[in-house]
Image (cartoon, rainbow, N blue to C red; front, top):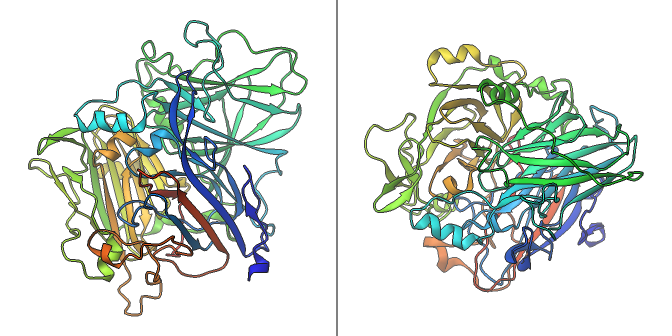
Length: 571
């Protein structure tokens, strides 16, 4: 088997070929000092890089690394897990999931490519470009966390980073001199696949490239109907692939822009990321005003219409040689409906907290499925309400009791004052409806029941709702949360616990002997340098992957979240 370990990833990008049953990724987490906005600050690096290294592989299986499903990696420990790669393709990213650490970095891209036998639904691009955008604070993540703990709002970000770098000095007043900015080098006439990820804290960003069309091709593991956009709103946690042809003249470089949305633009003008697209035959630097953002101050329907224009390419194959649209979700009867309402943060028991349906989630001391296996009493409750509570909000460990192979409707209502995005681990869901106002039973008449995009992160505008449909075919306990980091940290999340009622439980492996233990099971943990620990619940090995995450910081515990979501029952 050792002879099959053909590829060892220590470079910025590595490639796993379809015939290789093994590939190794060593990810070492540590702190380094950088100055992306001109202010020295401590960030979380992966293998010494910020953002973290990227990995390119062939077909992938999802991994959920949040507190309800895994114990954190203790300081100075190694943790290796093995899992199958299957049933998903596309553009994803990983990030640390504990203690507001994502606001300090620790994130990086993860590309999952088609097997050779499955053609792309477009001509093979001439190159692959990764762009990671996100709002950024010069305060470190512990200071941001402390502000929330003290009942304060985070306030306006200090800027937007593109690939870990600050803005090009397009404006001498807004951008100080000496800021390092991102430059993407391209060849004229070639077409590139540009993968854009919003890895920020809480700000929706509009992405655009001056004078270039963005031909949307894929989002979060599913191919889309191909259509051109001059710009696209990318909400926190979302990922997109664009095909961009370098068909402009090279009289000068071109701006790449990621600017804040759904905020007061006059106040937030400096919260803009700017990079440079540089043709090899460019004759000069970019200059002049930035390309305009969407002009929708008096058109509230713009953002929703754009979001609902993203449709699934039902004729394209994904990870398997069958069309993505072969699952006719619109003809399946819904078994349960959950209306999840988010509200502005409130004080509960003397602490600022955020809620779903009036419940602010408290993370369990013992991961949910381990608590099940070892019969840990009181670890959680299976009583999450399907509708908003009418009484005072409370803190609780309340979970949704999902029905295996059920088909549920989830209505995400945003009664908060900020635009939000929501994410579900372990699944892709169909985004079938979205609107301003209050959702009612009659709103189902507006649903797209034919070619809605399947994805794992969706947005909800303030004062609006988004409806998604989910087939619960993946056994486990899966996090459903606000992707806005401040709301997530303050408790706006829950889990859907899904159990196969069959006695032999063939869809889920038991926890391995060397799984991480914590909480009520801490006494079971072997205190040594962990190696070869597999993910807690895993089955059906086709490919065999090992990722090792190493915490080299002595004082901080890291949770590791690989944000790759699957669509089939493989866990």
